[in-house]
Image 1 (tube, helix red, strand yellow):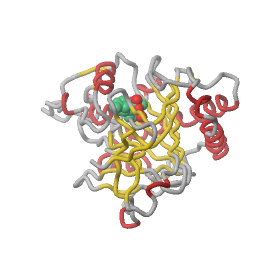
Image 2 (cartoon, helix red, strand yellow; image 1 turned 30 degrees about the vertical axis):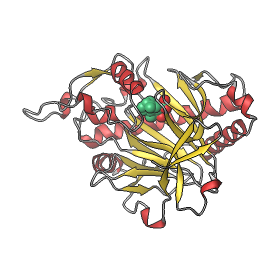
Image 3 (cartoon, rainbow, N blue to C red; image 1 turned 90 degrees about the vertical axis):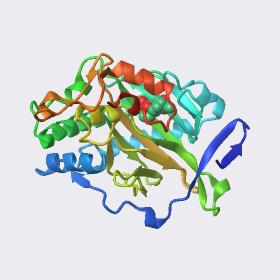
Image 4 (cartoon, rainbow, N blue to C red; image 1 turned 135 degrees about the vertical axis):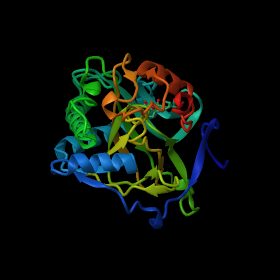
Amino acid sequence: MVVLASPPAADHIPLLRSPDPGDYFSGMPVIDLCSPGAPRAIADACERFGFFKLVNHGVATDAMDRLESEAVTFFSQPQADKDRSGPAYPFGYGSKRIGLNGDMGWLEYLLLAVDDSASLSGAVPSGSAFRRALNEYIGAVRKVAVRVMEAMAEGLGIAPLDALSKMVTAAGSDQVFRVNHYPPCAALQGLGCSATGFGEHTDPQLVSVLRSNGTSGLQIALQDGGQWVSVPSDRDALFVNVGDSLQVLTNGRFKSVKHRVVANSLKSRVSLIYFGGPPLTQRIAPLPQLLGEGEQSLYTEFTWSEYKKAAYKSRLGDNRLAQFQK
Ligand code: GA4
């Protein structure tokens, strides 16, 4: 493995081939959340890619911009000040280290817990403009996640409409918010390779909803052949991806998408991601409404708490569902 050594010397960040224009994802489903065809289009995209771009989603541009600008201000502080908001685990500021088992990426981030009323616990001072911007954006993006999950149920043809969404609206649902900052990695400019911003992985939760600034870097692996394709950035859109738990709830119909971020050599990337997870005690097993005559679950049963525990014992790129596959 090629590694990029930068101070401190313990930082080993894997390199990736720099994306080129030919890598762009030409077949990306773009779905208007308000269109009558949205439920079917969403279910179709989740089956084919586990990923889609959402427009006309109703989150105010102002709310997204305000949070982005507060995040930029936070990350512009001196390192020692940011470190005071750390460590990242269980929640707080982190830099380069991802998870607990040695994964590294060219980024710094804030990992935040969202409580039931969509307000935050943790690292960002209450009463600050940053906290207000977070609360406003998270409240809005959470509503989008609920609408998307209702559309998924409708698209799958299952009742009730809240069969999936109730898992993120339930008391005690385990929702996480992440603000990522990928600084430009100028040292590698022109060398044909780039630092790994966030290594390949699938998300353990049900759904993830991402918004980024105008800097590209996100790549997804296509289900059909695993080819990596680059997702063109669009600061006005939201990007939704299926997580492992939703793959299990749909008995493999929806695909948990492998994705990663390649750091840009010239521009900073800032992304805001909401992860919708169920309550810790939620049993994760295919919805009975989705199992056809005689169809068996592809997975041994587990709770979200068990899955989360297993996830934190794993490396980022591991296939975490494999141990639960029958
Ligand atoms: C991926 C999705 C979310 O960002 C996250 C990540 C978490 C972390 O950064 O702490 C994990 C990763 C994510 C999956 C496997 C474990 C846990 C890092 C890691 C190596 C917050 C999450 O819930 O799972």
